[in-house]
Length: 327
Image 1 (cartoon, rainbow, N blue to C red):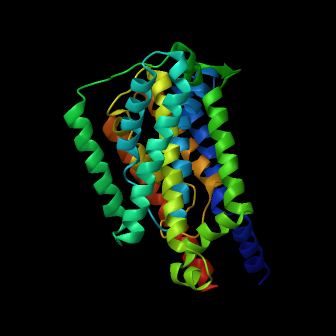
Image 2 (spheres, rainbow, N blue to C red; image 1 turned 120 degrees about the vertical axis):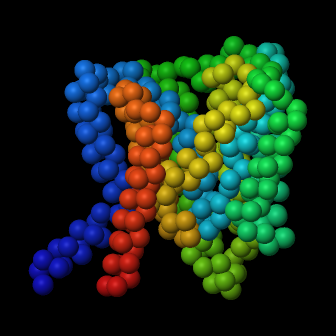
């Protein structure tokens, strides 16, 4: 009986968020050993910088994706939206420092408009979120393929500081991403709007009967998700020095962001999870990529391992949920 009580206490203490950071520590130790056997160092200055750089853009997208998934929705348009927003920013700025602010505002405004369309299609036309956001993604893709054949526009040199400046080993862009993650955590856990997001994801009918405007909440999270994708596009444009139509799809930020959210313990059905776990999931994926590069792993094997990690994580979370319900 005592052993059972201890086991239950441990299971309550080790939440999905704690689990993902424990897994991150284990991965860092195992990766350091594997890279060390090959004569390299995983967590030197360059390795840490590589992990943080890889994780920053994905982190921005995944923060927005977390809020959408918490309501039981989904956004598959973010990858193509990132490509289009990077072009809007670069072509608006056109290398002119005086156009940085207008370029940022126009980019984020357009991203918000796309999020608004996603939300309205889902709530007013009753289209499944998977189909609605995939349809918007295909519309953006068609425009990109018909209009652009490669990179276009240019951003001023001053704007590129966003993508390359560092404070010690930590990129400024990473600090911005973490600050936004902290703001999103505060919003989700300390405000009425955050409570509404969890309520809608937990049970939309109950939330509606409780007086929550579920449609407004769904539209709001889709707008926020698209704005985060717009911020990711601005960061990528600052790194590249121009806009690129396929910078979002080449990075796989649609499926990668969903994978990071799921690894972080957020349920795809909504109602449970959070940004803290998502950042852990982002760091796991970024660390895996860095380890693979150091070991010279082929792209095929990279995808196999990523898929195995994702399936294992979801299976463990599902098993944990079933055991809790059984108790």
